[in-house]
Image 1 (cartoon, one colour):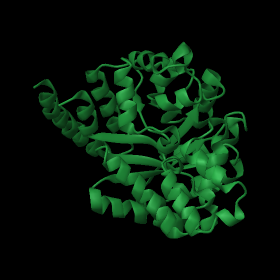
Image 2: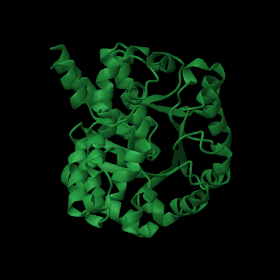
Image 3: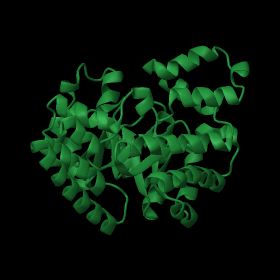
Image 4: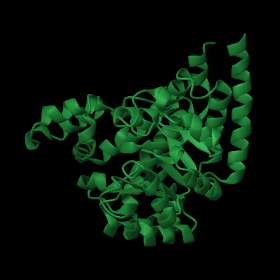
Length: 344
């Protein structure tokens, strides 16, 4: 067995996948055609082109435009099912997917109805493939007024029973001070609902520290600048905060010139819990398997360390502790069996 086959075959957990970034260009173009979007959208064909060949300085606009084409309940159910199927093909057993309901305003659904809709697609995938999916209800930094209402709903018992395991905050750090979200995120913390925050993209270490102080995240996505800040590294260790990283995102946005320049090695060696995720696989033209392979090919980690990073994703998930412990042992056993084939 080749190393690439091993990476493909090893069981995995995906913690950093955004639903709007997993939409296949062909699928969303078909949805647009079925909903007669072309007639009401200026430069429609250009937007379609951008789905397959994104201009990364226009990424937010591409996401909003493509998501607005989702206008029928069956559209969203299909996107969920396809995202889950793509994960299954990479032998992902469990995933926590971020979804921002505001992107699908054209559906005009109440919160509970929206959750039921995405769960319809999720449950169909689980019946077909056995993959389990939980939800991180996310919001952009441009929407502080919506945050309290969203988090109030996401922390209800009905939402938790519906598979919501965390609330998330994304978007550009420069839009608004992160303190605008402190109150609702503190409410989530009091109700024992996990918090996932994207930080460091624009403000580096300062943005990470501000987010940690105001939002008390359990998991930080990207954390650009963390590797260069001893203060950030210490606070991450003290707070047992997981970092979810994506090499392709850093490359596409020009944060590093080559994969070998990405600070995965430094972050791993710092003793922080590090995981790899696919983030927006369609728009960044990657996958979870691809991120694992890129880390190994560029000698950022060894194969043993890659196994540990994969197990970190299990340990850092929001599954119950007993389920995480059982999954870790199952994964270890399967890794050992696959390693025998690699070494043969």
